[in-house]
Image (cartoon, rainbow, N blue to C red):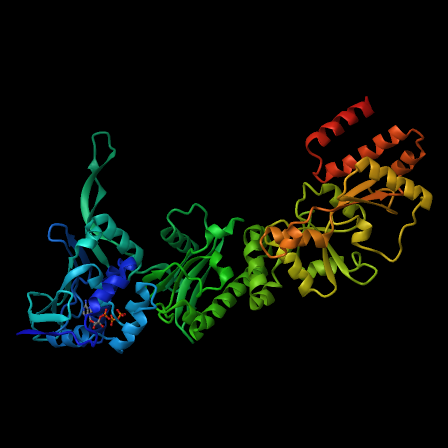
Length: 629
Ligand SMILES: Nc1ncnc2c1ncn2[C@@H]1O[C@H](COP(=O)(O)OP(=O)(O)OP(=O)(O)O)[C@@H](O)[C@H]1O
């Protein structure tokens, strides 16, 4: 047997194309060839299990090796092997639907993944790194002859008698000059670990040095010796392939460490995904402790297809908000090798998206139901994620409404419904709106919180970066509900009641107070109002309008509204006309002393808002000293 021929593709020469266009991703040649070896091994195992292969199965470990001098990389399996006819059928007649289509499409392709899988070119990816590829193979079939195929990267090949004595296949790559980086142990180890860490058949890459106990020394201490052991790359039974009933918490945590050896934090909890219908999907998703810098945590989910690592860019397969999770998804049904726009429109991908979202929501609901206290303790770590989910996914939001929690300044925790019940009567204004008061900074807004509490109102803590959006969401979802930050106005204006307090000053006195303070403050962006508040409330309060502040916040976080961003901060200075201090200022005949007192009262208001800085703070301190001195 010695035959020469041409690989049957219509295009003149496909290899230069493969090399040229796929260069950037060329490490995937190893993934493709090792995957083929795994497939061939699993096929022989299946045949043996079905009784169709009667011979010895033997050791089915796949070997990857390299020879730096000869510049070769060899992938050897003990799988089903191929006869010469099978080589002709499976290797020569390249398994893609049409070379013309290929040539049309490769022009647009952005990465090797797109071409390789889509056109069934797995084996040919070898030519990205090799000048010449040789196959030595012996089929499992009785009486089969060993066969050899060799091809030098043109469309012509040669088939002849081979030298393999044992069932299986060797793929020998003669590495080209540009790809010599692959002829090192560390580089190959890295690629094998990246793509093959969880392959279902053991992959051996040479040996490694391990230390083993070797008796005891004269003091009775254990001695160790160095031994060479097989360097097995993979864990063939990763946790996600097992049934949840086989796994304990320790197993999930151990698997998490296997996935992220450099992660310090333990995950909070996890979900084991297992779907057969209408698509196939397994996996484990972990909820990490989410810090506020959530951008850094993205792209932690790894996508596998039948235990072969594909990518950790799961952007279109996993809903945006779930990208904060960690873990593994394995599905042979995700079209891995097609373009992004196609992926978004793919109905399987959409179903997978919806399914994962539902599972995550169900898991959270279950945790809340079965252990509310534990859930509340974890809330700090998952609130960002839940809120992000509610804002971006309506289906999730529907479910999350039951377990999304609100915390007030007293540390009490409520569900959305419970909180609505709590404040619905007392915080209803004269127009029937229920006003939720909130703070984004408990320490800084303490005086405002104290005033609100003093009036019998509750104040929520909404202090994470996502809360500015969540506030708008709550208003939109709950009819006749408004959210107002405690420092947005004086309390009687935040929740306006039918009954207003009467101002104890005459119109004349009001005017005098206004001009007195305007003079003392003398700032264009501070507008003075005299209002009738409770005697217990502060004499002077500085506030910034809720609407203006939200627009400015949005401008700052890049959510449009840049017009507002460029406007100066405008403050409202409310003088409590009913406060004894104001009356005292009025009754003081000495103009200088009046100014001093007004300035002092105003500075105190600025101080409680954290706005008193620089030389204003210095003169405040000096003035205070002279006042008490
Ligand atoms: N190590 C091997 N042992 C036995 N048969 C092999 C081996 N490698 C490749 N083959 C045969 O060659 C065929 C073509 O392989 P190739 O990698 O090009 O495509 P594929 O594996 O069918 O599809 P893809 O890699 O795109 O998923 C395989 O289907 C298989 O029949």
